[in-house]
Image (cartoon, rainbow, N blue to C red; front, side, top):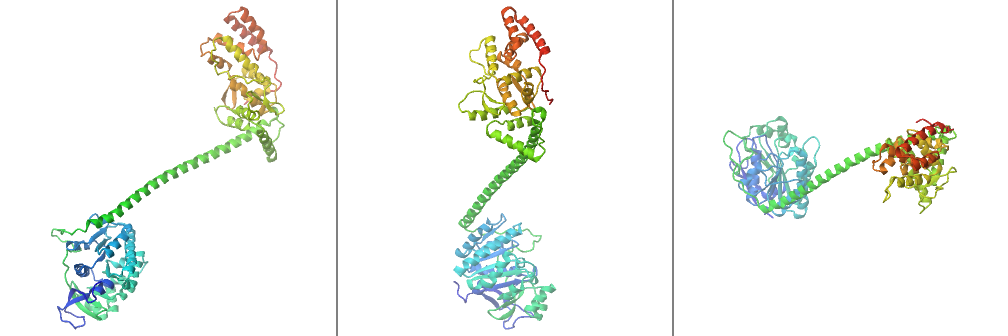
Amino acid sequence: MTEDTETIAVANVSEGPGGDGQSAPGTPVELPVVDILTGRGFITGKSGSGKSNTASVVIENLLSNNFPVLIVDTDGEYYGLKEQFELLHAGADEECDIVVSPEHAEKLANLALEQNVPIILDVSGYLDDDEAQELLTAVARHLFAKEKKLKKPFLMLVEECHEYIPEGGGMTEAGKMLIKIGKRGRKHGLGIVGISQRPADVKKDFITQCDWLVWHRLTWNNDTKVVGRILGSEYADAIEEMDDGEAFLVTDWSESLRRVKFHKKQTFDAGATPGLEDFERPDLKSVDGDLVSELQDISDEKARRESEIADLKQELEKKEQRIQQLERELEEARDLSQMAEQFAQAMFQTAEAPYRGGDGRNLNRPEERQAALDQYDAAAADGAVEESAATADAAETDADADEEEAVTTAAAAAYPGLDTDIEVGDDGHVGPTDAGVEPERAHEHTAGLTGREDVIERLRNVIASLPPASRRMLAFYREIESCDPVDAHVAAGEVGDKQLAYSRNGPLRRAGFVEHVGRGRYAYALPDLVRSEFADRLSESELREVVTAVEAAFRPDLSDHLDEGRNGSDDSAAADESEEMDDDEEASKPTLDTPVAEK
């Protein structure tokens, strides 16, 4: 703690109007250090009148006596002090010792108050004014908080203070913090000096609370009015004629008003107006490297956090894009579901048509449609409804028709461990076929298969194991290009029940005797099946012979002719005879009672 009597010499008494007249011109003017460090000051004057020189002279004298200060430099003018003194130059420019942000505020306050490090807080390089305001606010807040405990004399000098504590308009957080220091900082040891070339623009509550003021030359009418209101009208006239460096010095501790001329600063004048002469930057003293490294650690940590945040933002953007994609897909799925539901309603309507065996219910009526849905839902619970698979089959163009799988799977669940084919009876009962054995999948080759007779025998056995209705459906598929299972079921002499039709169509499809050709229609596939059994190595006549022999299993009228062919005819004759029998059968085929619905 400094002695209350310690002073610094900053000016001499000047000639001219104004002043108390108690001291002769040239008399040194000294300022008490404690009052400067802990008081509230205001330095003003138009550009070029000497106000920045006066501030620098005060700072130079304090630094020469090892009293630390913090300078808020808005124009980058004070780095010249480093020509003689070791100051930490912190800001946003590369010329600064360290680039700082609000994250460095607490560390800067610690260095200033606890380690007596003079600091130039250069805010001139921040392109974003909000960032500069935030930095100043944070530094001022930490200084005020620490001084409440330390109570150490310390001066904060703020250039262009009208930008933070304006007379009109809104006050920023930085300005509110500076006003707080002006009102309450003195009792904690924290002093403040505001500098401005426009006193009319500075909040008058701040000016009137200052205990020392320096008034350099002012010429603008609004500014001279402020001088007249605070000092008196005679000083408002005299202030317009002052020379560079001259000022009226008003101090509470001496209760005097003196006209003085301040000394010229000793360090490099970085704020001087550039001239035509070559500009030479002086050699500047460097601050302790350890101080800079401590601040650099904070910068590195900030950079690491910013990198992590950037990565997280990028990851978040990817997830948001994925969510949007899923939402689009979900919306498309809802549209498809709605289309499928509408198609299913159409299928229900078709299935209830009288020619299909239905009772002619009108499913457009809500009560009848609900009754039909309840009926099908109940059947599905018993494992007998194939409606959902059938609807999907009808809705998907060129998709594989797996309607029968759902029926047989449900029935298999009702008969665990029973490895047989499943049939839905006329009474709606789901159970094993009368044959008691599952039809072999004709497309699965048996190991060791060597001759035609083996293939014929095996395929005929498969056909023999089919339900009678399925065999009659197969005969109908042979005579028509393609149709849906309900049409084949009706042509086989059965009712137009969709569940029964798809159930009895299943063994034919799984055995490979029919194949799905799109839009819920099936076609006769036995020739292709036989061709694949022999790896496509049969001639056309041989193929016809084998196919005809297999077809005898569901066309009894072919059996006698085939037996004669085997006993005394060659392959060619048998094939010709088979073709003749086909023609005879076509002529004698019984007429179907129920017409086939055209798709």
